[in-house]
Length: 283
Image 1 (tube, rainbow, N blue to C red):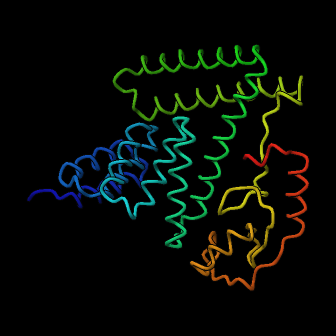
Image 2: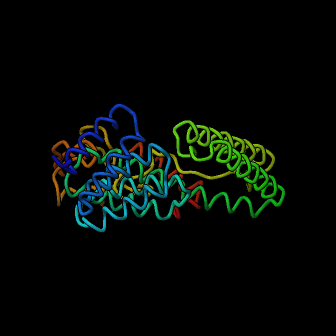
């Protein structure tokens, strides 16, 4: 009896749930060989590859899944954004995450909060990239030191790959590479902190506190309102959402316009922050 794509996928799901991502990837690949027009098989393999830190192959799978089902594929866009963030492509990741978020809002998906957090992370990464470029332009020494740290990381990363050889995609190798990158990022953060202490006005990386950001538009709020569940949104964006769907975007609980209340304390905090940080209008 021939093995079907569905049975291979089900077997792959078992391996995935048990944390055996290499065998799960293998089984999803076999399923794809039998049914290359099933978009869910590609998203399953993409999710497995993300766990294996195989970012570029995961992106390829997401794009293939989207090509097969461009209209209703929130999961593919969500996974695509994760892989793009991992490869330090915040602009592309933000667009993918926003597409996934729009799909969540249309369907009142249970994943809305997770996708919302991913959009916020992508926007933060995009902003941080711009901020680091601004700070680097102000200090040639900082730029030189940071480039040296990342150059050392590249050499050590290549050494890890050479040491594992054909097993460079193994869980052990990927974990060592991930630890190495995390350690490098901590060094860069410490470097920026030291320079910020020396010149706080010009060399501090600026950020916007999460509680000032609208969870629908992802911009700083100007006229926040609060729901009965304690979530705050920009008035104009939540009103527009409620006209389409009378539910809280994050909790999916029923919500009517008359249940919204002005969040005066948050509004004052937003105004104060913008008054002292004029740059934040471009966030």
